[in-house]
Image 1 (cartoon, rainbow, N blue to C red):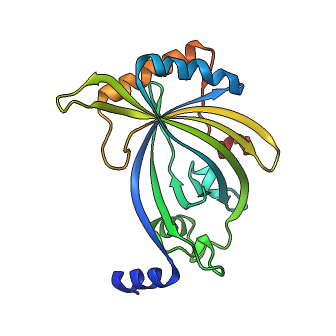
Image 2 (cartoon, rainbow, N blue to C red):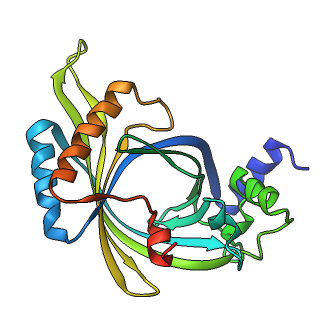
Amino acid sequence: MDTLVQMEGKMKKSGYSIREKLIIENELKFEISEKKKFKPIYDYLKENYVVVPYKNALMYDFYYDTDDLNLSKAGITYRVRYRPQISINLKLPQTMTNRTWSRYEYSCKVDGKLPENMSTFDVNCDIHRIVKKFLGVTNLLELKNITIVSSFRTGFILRFPRINVLGENEFLGVAFFDQSTDKMNNKVFYEFELESFQQGDVFASPYIFNEFDEIGKFVESLGHSTSSKSKKEKCMNL
């Protein structure tokens, strides 16, 4: 087995490196019927918080599972995202508290380019070790691409209007307005998401969840429904 030093040396030679962490994802997630209905939500956020443009991104998500959908049946999502940086993610089943969904997510970000003859399955990361152990296999060759989703994401950082003792507006979360396309069925759908800020580094305090719930109540008042399905599940009707 390679030592950590040997692994780092090999990655530097190949032109890529990885950053791994286990995060707790806390988010509001609503289905929006059409794009123009994003605006009332944005206007509400603008009236009640300090809204700072974050970034826009075009993302391509490739979802994988076995022929028998063994991962999906267990509530597990394995995804490779290109934007264009490669991000490998493993999401565990989610639970809801009031209107906020929470779940554990393993994240592996790949910095640099993989060699041309190297698959993302060959990246030596915790996610792949976990999936192999769960499936009882020694390689991931049996995983198949089950759906592809492209999303144009517009993001905004939300800060509280009040000023703290350091003279700063404290962070609340990051709001995302997504227009996604199921590339296999050419179906378009829209979502509003609000994620707790720096989810891998700090745990959201209870008052954050209370604030999320108030925002969720407003979005519901517009006639939108909480989304219990991931983008993969929507495309596959799971």
